[in-house]
Length: 273
Image: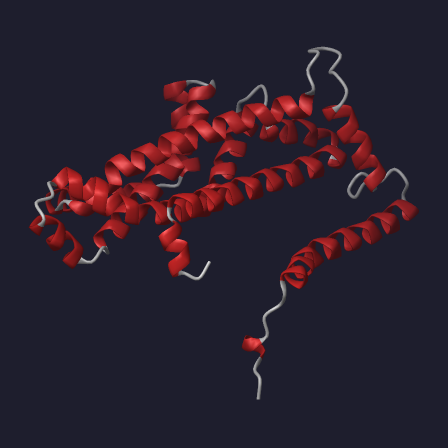
């Protein structure tokens, strides 16, 4: 008797199955929008797809009369710059801190519990403090991303380092490797694929921190625009922006997958990928 677990879809079937939930959401929305607009043509809660197209055309392909900018692309560039800078700093910090803490017993004893506790502080709870210390400019927004992401990444890297088989470390010492050589040539390559996975898992939180900071104090960005137009119930702008943020996060996630496969082929081959 062949069980369900043994049925594997072909690649075209897998693509169609992946697209099916998205198509269903669009169909359900289209039906709901048509029903609401038939009852109330001025309804703003569920605009038609034509209204979405008009809003996107206005924001993305027409210059703003006051600033001369294409608002949609300007907001995207501002938010992506903040995201990339925050993630880059977080990645460097987690490597510089996480690997030594996970590898060296004295550092693990001294800072392991501190990093664990630090990673549990709700970043949004300290957002007012960051605004007081760093002001309302770019620095506070980037610091919020780093504060929210770097401790989580460092803790995960430290735990991954601690799980490396002791036999590998003993063999490296037998061959005369120094502490630095063991961290860079033995530990780091094994931590790298896990680091990519952790970055992927932190993308949702990263966007949350960014949008929260932009909503409270900013003069541009995707989150700023969403909270700016909410007072007018402009769902024709809010929903496309939400969809665009989701697409950007998906592309970033896919980019991390490609980077992981390129840098750690052995890891993905071992998992059958």
